[in-house]
Length: 583
Image (cartoon, rainbow, N blue to C red; front, side, top):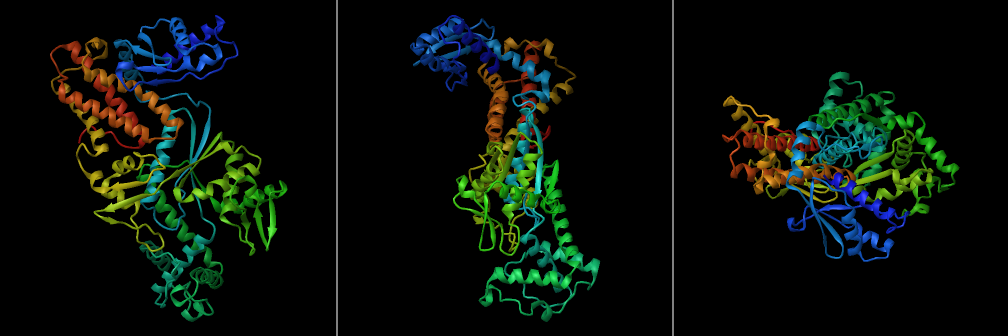
């Protein structure tokens, strides 16, 4: 309907140009907004106020001329001037009847758009280091990224979903060393575990696999392991220096065997992450390896590109990127004085790889703690000669889980964290997916476990799913009475009561909501819409009988609620939530 009205106003705009009222070169964007108060009609347009300056006339005069030039439409009852020059459009009561027909005809395609046809987008999300299981913070990024991908596909984008596997660098070395030390525990070696090691039970599990498959192959005595190793933090030393020394000793003692320990750790945890996400309904098109960037010299290539462009310099043995030239607060190290490539250098190479793959848009979804990382990545893209606007970075705020009044910790080093798997098992995939995206991604989220598990109208996902199940129940009752309904024999003109009119208007809003949510990368708008639609339906259900004796009225009402069921299913599908027929 909004698109139809847009076409009417475009025609009126062209007519004013032809009449010489508006200059031929005048360019404006026509905005139509749904009114909040039904007294002001269904839609409001501010085109007259935007054209007043071009025409050098009062907005109310332009508004009157626009109304006169609007083509006749069976969907429009009247147009009125309001305030300083708004044009309020009142739709005919029959205008919304076509919505039911569109929904029943298009089914799962209702709400789809060609807004961004032929545009490609790469969405990279979660990308947690494979150093431990996913926790509830990762879950929010997963739910948001997957919902956004679904939303952009509905909007016409060709979407590529990617997980960037940080399988290179210091954190992975700490992981491998942690596994080896736990393995030595299993071999009977007395070990004081480093403060900076990974301590979760999953490390013991991987170490047990290493021991089972390799016996004492990687065994070394305590004296050999800790000889000349700097003290750890509890002994007055530095935890970073201590763990780095242990990593070096691990590599020295294991030799070629180190790669076996490293690979077992990475592959075990990565497979666990993959399974966890798939069970959460999140499936990727590609798992992109950081190690692959190193092996294919992509990191070195990216550094050379920056050097050739004159954006690097050497200081105290380290290679620096002049990111301060691009509004970053300071310059950044690419290669440390010991020759070690930084994470930032790998990230530059990864984004260069993305750009060279030819995607029209790149979307990175990061945790809010990476906020300070945004300017330097944008700076690197600009320095590489690419359009920094091709990259959008969406920040996802922290999710805090409460069990009663206890705030649960999420440290992957200490092992004291609630995993995504545990959360899913407790509240279910549907509740977890919905609760994660029902607020703006940049807003902090306190996850209410008790509410997520409740079967009441206060639980939004239950309330929405229950609306879908109620409609399925009505249709089963129809079948039990050995009756059937057809849209062809439905008199939609009988849908006149306030509850039916409210439902029709809400159904008509769905395509606009999808388009708005896609443009602003805001799947929470879909969640809010579904809550509104479910509320309108429950009110209607409680106030009226659907299986009435009047066949044409019965078919009209059944057509309406079947359309509601379809839109509920479509919207829940975007979020990644099921639409049950029985609850």
